[in-house]
Image 1 (spheres, rainbow, N blue to C red):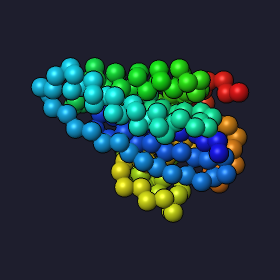
Image 2 (cartoon, rainbow, N blue to C red):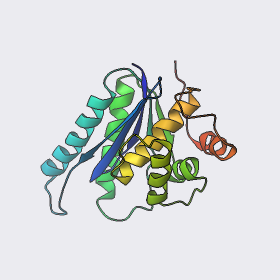
Image 3 (cartoon, helix red, strand yellow):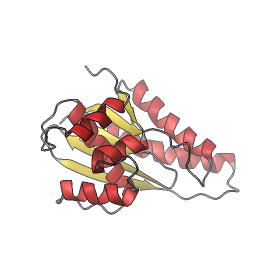
Image 4 (tube, rainbow, N blue to C red):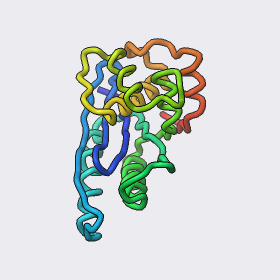
Length: 181
């Protein structure tokens, strides 16, 4: 069954969500731990674990992947490692001919809540209202679900997502959408 994959990439908890063409949704997260004094080998293993899990989720019938763009203002963790995981995920998707859309964090928030400055909790609340049958336990899952919904809406899938509101249309227009066959 074809689906849109939403990805909220992170070193500590990467959120993943699928929206299928029939409207079914499912979420997942990948947690990893590291320390500031980890060796390059340890840091590489951590990034490999995250990317392998994303690859498992994207492996079959992904029509479009939607990943949250890098948050330049993020504090904590290693910006090099965050960039590394983001680029490794994107490189794997592209190498497997999966179109990738990039959505800025503020666009994701605006699409989900109506406000580009909404925090992660507000996005989680909005997504839980939209999908009451999916148990969202983490902010990254909610973010990934919003990204997957944006992709489904961009593709014109009904999928129980409804037609985009005026604010959602603005948020969708701000994303970087690839051509999808």
